[in-house]
Length: 459
Image (cartoon, rainbow, N blue to C red):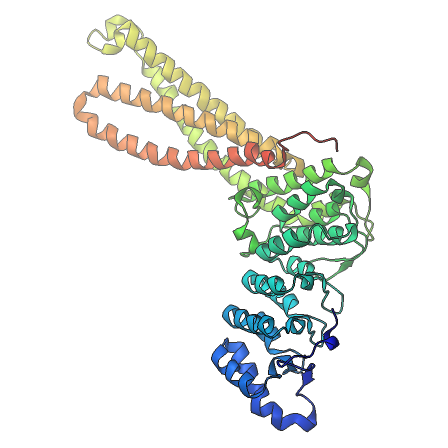
């Protein structure tokens, strides 16, 4: 579709008001049109169009933007809807293909702004807009949206263009989605074409602005670090989020899970391929995640230390109870503990509390003396933490029963109020503990399921 082959009442050809000999004309309607498009004031723009029917084909900024460009980047959806409808009515959809001085169409700017509704209006008017590259680098609207991390825009444009993309374009967009933290979209692309794991982008740019030549998805993923600011990941499906996991150790675990999964997908020799800087994916991963690993180590140590203190106190308390248990019937003729059945229950619960609290202490101690290597965060440390928390919870249950049993049979029912307060305190503590235990459990055993295919593959 050529722009110069169209001639309609709306516009004869693209016009430029920025030349010196048209300054008065620019001030008369160029500036008001710019303000109207920027504010989304369609009534004002329509009045200008009534007296200057070619105004919507006019470049009204030094960057060569038309009113449609300005409204698209300003996210003025209603303005764009009415303007595109007018273009369709007057058979002037060729105006959608006008580019500014940077080579961008209005759809490119809509993709850059992330406003899906605006993009839909333009694409419905002429779907061939999707194939028109923009920017001086020749990036398509889909590539621009992926580069800027607009998740919903990428989903929409990818759905329309995925059957038209060449393998090279797929590779570039796939690596860009990883760079932009759009991991869910990367997985969708990967599920449709598993050969993408072996893709090599000819030129990628990292967060520091450095150009990395010939990097594979594994290289890109290895150097990705968890961002502390609120990014587009906040809108991502929960199972694909990295930053929603509480605790640096669990974030490190999820990062390792992603890295290992991609490493398992690629051919073994690719895992050792070096990039232009002479670094393997594992080397990049270690360098880019050293701060997160240190934070994870600190988080794990603090958690293990706090829980081990509680476990030690429980072990000391139940050991004291065992020393006070009556040894013969002569000592406790009036004590219900002398009854063989009750005494057995008391002794068993007390012993179980001692065993579980001691085992919990040892488990937390093993966490404290761990080497805290990257691989430890994947399975070893979370499993130890889960086991330690479960044992600690069981010891709390047993000591609660033992304490209640001891108070009732030695002090009588008037102490029932104290028992209630003790129970409330213990419930509050266990609620917090169970919350932590569930997070660790779901992160350890639930995260791996996101990569399991419902049907077996040959790859």
